[in-house]
Length: 318
Image (cartoon, rainbow, N blue to C red):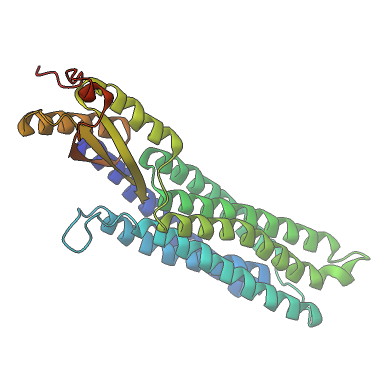
């Protein structure tokens, strides 16, 4: 289990490093394109990259923090920092979309001609390529690590890739109409594209932030993992009387399972402890990145078997 956890943590760190270095490259050439082209659409794309670069740095630090073991202050560890990073990314992207929308609406009343549209198009093509390569690599690592923060970063890169595609198409349209009879619409293409891009940003950003906030409120683990816990518990049914109060929660890529297990009252404590420990390990082995805690409760002997003076069928000293 510890080795598997270490491998997953390595995947998470690699994803954060890929995101960081790709964003550094994107930052450099988008800044150069913005200085040359003076485009609102590129400004929006550049602002998203600035956020992406900032989040990449925070993501790297956050993932390092999430790997720290539980301590006296954080008894369940630091896994929830992944959800904080996820929520922050969604909220900031939403804010950028809103700000750029207002600027674009203002630009519609004072349109400006875009200079060097070919430079903007080349920048968009390069951005499109890097973003989708980065998204592919990050999603691969997200599946291997089961990290919501890494998955959110993959969503960010995919979103940037589609935005760059839309901006590239806008520059092509600008080039086509620039010298034709529809040249009067050319100054409006850039702000309209920016508004459309802002809308595209808003929809997944709201979903991303909403899911992160739901996870921060101790959402239970996914249904298949719950069923796996019950199935593995049932394998040991000969050694306990009953179970109740199943509680589960998630913290980043980590899962926590807690429940009360009713043990035969006449079973020696050491024997009951060994049985419960074995059940805990079995359940944990079936749910990746999980911590399982079973609380032993002695049987109250109020069942029909005891009332009929019959022996307990669950207590087998073997």
